[in-house]
Length: 399
Image 1 (cartoon, rainbow, N blue to C red):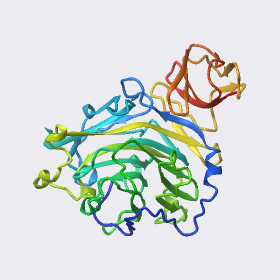
Image 2 (image 1 turned 180 degrees about the vertical axis):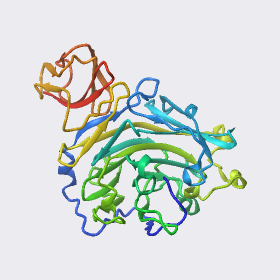
Image 3 (image 1 turned 90 degrees about the vertical axis):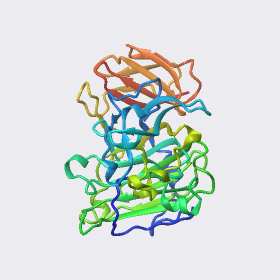
């Protein structure tokens, strides 16, 4: 999402052929995914954004280094219902309106300083707006050391971007999307990167779709709709190597990253920049009351608990950091048929149980023992919250 005009290496592919990088073998993907356990999720429940523990709202009109045309405002972010499905979602709304010398406003938020991780499977269920012409929805990652080393030294992983100028030209905008990685030292007008555009065989702007990244010490791989097509090949795959080479990806993608969701208006990616081209932003027009929205149903992070993984969750009230290898609470017996015990240094303030679709099925307060016998057999996610605002996630099996 942070782009500059000149690049050192960029590969663009305009078909949905899911070609793999040389040497990659993903034949055991299904068995690998069965080992992942949910460690963090945001289901955007209720009516307010969880800024205490999960999200930081960005407010600025700097153009993101891409000559974007929007001003990011808090007022353009909300929690509410997606009109057709009724799903409770994060809503990022782009509007054509005058604000602080900009002609458009929109929303952007990050987990910077709240949650960052290294390695695992991250996914988001997103309904994009109709992008043509001029909207640029994105789901992406930046290195957690961004504030110290800046971009592109921090590294960037774009899991989903849509609204590219080439999609507009080919009239395939509703199916055209890309994944990308950016890294290295910016010099002589360029930097190392690898980007791949694809054209899906169906519209990505008609409904919710699942975008997934699987990231380990060897590869970054991205998938479309794994919930519907579990055997799908990645639409983006890049080997991670050269850990000691300052220009190689291994030097930059072996550390924690944080999550970003935003809906930009204009910019180099869309091919529309500058105040003289405001009329070309046709995605915001009279037919949609000069506004359009991106809906995010949930964001979920899974890890295996393997050596090398990192998961950092920072609560504003406590200053504590949780890693997948150092949990405060133990739950037992697990699997369980009746009462479940929660063993830790304090009695949890709140315990919430979700099914694997993210629906809340039970909630308990001020207890370290809960009765799960009324719940149907299956897998669940247990979230434990302390009085200090610390949140820890466990996987639960109900027999």
